[in-house]
Amino acid sequence: MDTVILTMDMIMAGAGKAQSFTQVQLNALGIEFEFVSGWKLKLVGREVSLDNYNKFLKLRGMKKDPDGPMMYRAGQIHKMDTSMPMDLGL
Image 1 (cartoon, rainbow, N blue to C red):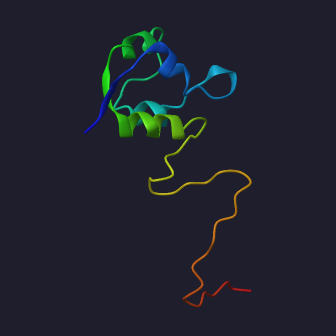
Image 2 (cartoon, one colour; image 1 turned 90 degrees about the horizontal axis):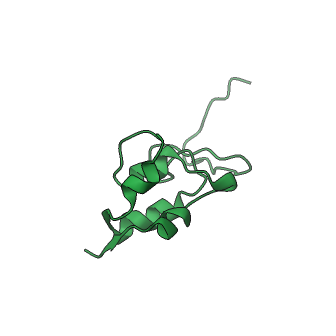
């Protein structure tokens, strides 16, 4: 498994709007702590898998993991499974 050592530049590459991050991004890096002052400095020098770092980048600005149970994002249309009839009660 390939790994990377996090630098401040690598962490900041995952920043979303207004230089913000989401809890789901930290979870992708295996971080369980909440955002507290100095959290980025605590990550510098930490070794993480390349897959987890790429997921951290992919989750930029997302509140939920799209690979998790359910993902809802504004502006997206989700396809319904139409293979089974559904009673809408109309």
